[in-house]
Image: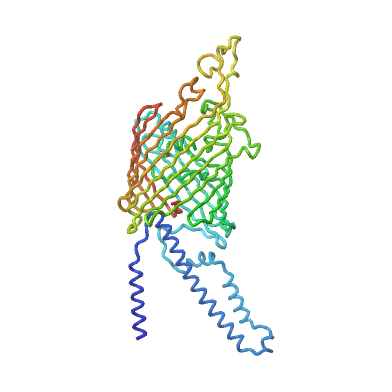
Length: 517
């Protein structure tokens, strides 16, 4: 009867295992799958180690019990010493190290979603992946690079290599994990560009729910800026991000400290300190390749004090509104000097919202509906500017043959002023069936008033009102590829109305860490 009961129990267990639901194929599902695999592997290793420890302990106890008190004082045999050494080694092994080193012993079949892993010593390892992002299409605009504000946007008629990204990530030791992103792209002139986009380390064991990130990294401002182009829901960068944070996003060398607050819901504070100069600091100490920006020629000096750095605080929180709905809210700031004057600053404020609905009976993450919105306000202190450097005659007119900055032959002085601009984007995604997502984005950027320099130069296209509507349809054949078709209806005060259509392809080789929810 016991044998029959055991057979029945085994059959029931096998039946229950075979009826487990399929793993989610979206990013959240993949993360759950990886976590489950690690937990199962850890449990198997733990059980095997526990059995070894119990067997060794039992054998050691048998030696101890067979000896009298005088014998116990005698020197230990070699077999005893070996048993004690084995037991101490098993008890002292790091669980993470055991999990990594015994993966091959478990003889788990490799799948395409498993990491391409290079083992190091101890618990260190390296995951390697490659992501390719390409676009094809065209636009009615004559100046497509001027229309597309993002550094990775489609930039010409025909084909564009938007981003080819090599990612190296893994655990350095029990104290840090590291990640590096090296990208390659081809610009509108056909020139190849290779750059180190990110390379940073994150702490793993600081007390008090603190975490430190240091190196070259995307500033945690809003939801979109910290993400890479392949993770966007659209082919191109939102207008407000391109205008305020720059075509390549706000990123620079620095350090960031975060605190996961002890609240019953997710609540986290961030404070970053980074360099404020370079082409990846659009609204701060950027020379803009010597071209006028917001009516001034900018001159970047070296960092002379702590006040020359860029400070970026952020607060993020989330709530489960119900079993099927989640809401995330965030507020960000970026404060630092700009290069239009000796003591001029820039302030950028941002708020963001993300809401998602997914039914309890979803399959593979579908269907779902999500809504994401970001709004930004920029206050730019522009320094006083004058073309007095040009030679002038006694009447106050510029001498013939000299540079005429304003085009009217006269000397002009532009006063110090604060320029205020704002904008937003809002996008909705509808995953109507597994692997298929329809997206719609609306966006708008403008200024509060014309600046003093615009009355001399004329309206600045970098500040004029502009809006864009972009629907797209995305198909994910698997978690390793996607095809996206997008149309842009673009209207601006400086250029009128333009139409663009783009087809995007992405493929992924190797694992790519799940993106933030």
